[in-house]
Length: 134
Image (tube, rainbow, N blue to C red; front, side, top):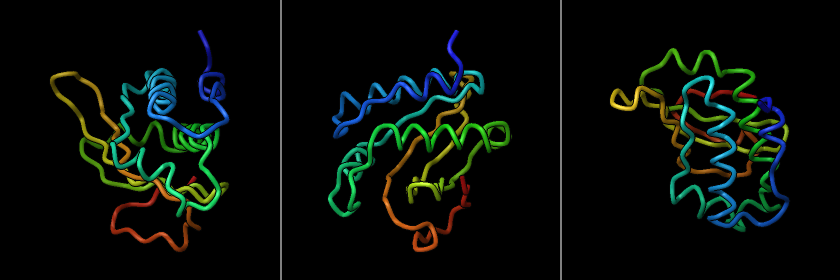
């Protein structure tokens, strides 16, 4: 069985297509499986992922590294919430990812839905939601 780091390092280094994002989602699902968290990306997330306003393109490995740091730093505390609106702020690559974490009783697992993404220095990213700095 592969470790979380091995699963998260198997990214691609190119523009992220819908199929590429689905591949990333599958790898993240496998990595977050021990926490019983299913990762989802909204349609708006994909639209914003490749938006020129981000400046430098967001690469698959950057995205996977951000989620790796989220898992490492906050994984065990995420599952203490049944309904959480928060934003991951990655200071290493200036990525900000607002998300909603909700417990699905019928599936008996958490669903973490990433709503959008933007490359911006975290101090310039404003949100009313809780900030998880990684």
